[in-house]
Image (tube, helix red, strand yellow):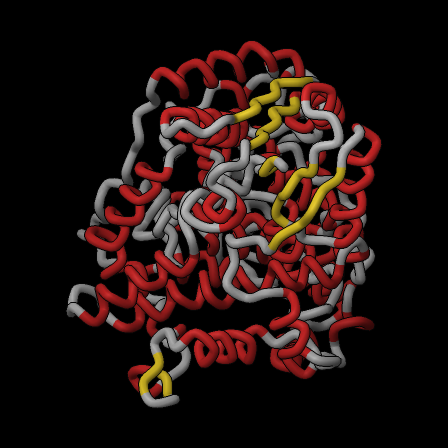
Length: 508
């Protein structure tokens, strides 16, 4: 029997590696899998470097590791079973039944068998979630409260600590002009990572030229992300000690020269298994109990990890494969090229896209209210934007991006989002400093120099009226639409069409 660890399940302190200390471990590097999408180089470096470090650490401790570097997963499995006939693999259960069936077929065709065990990167099991939901609608806030009760996190005698379940209303402040967040941590590449960087650059260089943005993606900032358990714990320590206290108040704010703000930057380590959700939650709660972090910061962080991350995992599990192709608004516009190259005069989009190009990262409000919001009101086909997120972000996996982008960002399915998260320039101006330095005018809707967010916002409401007006959460928005006469709406439609032509021509 062999423990098969896929690249995003690098868990040693629990799971099959811990429970089967005498069994060998199999890891497979697949070049073809890395070519499925035009992935950001840092994403490939992160994954392959973490896998190789994990291999080396196990081997240093005397563990037998079968490490296959092959063109396809099929090749890796075939090579393993040729050397180990009739072996049984033990691996973490994937997110969907269809993926599990595919893995079973791959292993069987290669000459072996496979057993699946629970995915230890999460706290809520499939059966637990399904029992909670029953036949009801997905409601994140209800699920989050359920998980608080189940785990006891931030609970006291059956009630939420502080008397409130949610302190989101205290998490929308704008930093003062003199505010400067702590410098985000950087983990310098060692020899293993340097080898991976060189390998990624040489192995995937040819595929870069096939991408819509040419070679721009191949010249990012130096790689900075944690690739070992020790480094991941260091990143957690840095967040708890230096960033958590101000995370809550400013978590929704955006500044053009502060890409990390006070965000945790722990999503890569959580999604690879280098950190567990229980340990990061406990560290944050301990900081609150020790008086080192306010409740609104700690609750906001716990809500992200215990609530949102767990919730999306199960929505993906239950709603795939339909969720990936969902498009209830019938959006059919092509993704503008500036998502790939950042070539736009819009200050907010240019800065956020540049951050993705440079680091494979932007924080959650930039993802939702800049990138996804523009895609929503522009009318981008959800699957296209989902593909871009999946390819561009170092922390992105299909189970992460699909519910976040297709549903939350583009209102593609209506399975849990109760309204589209559409906004005009007003929100961007309120939560950022982008508008002050932008050549587009935040207060203009039509005419030369009018901010594209404004005309696209009203055009979005206008063209989707038959679907959205009956939504009880959209009443106020449509009361404003009703205040616009036919002439103004015609000018808005004309400006929206002009914006799309400018975007298609690379002139926005």
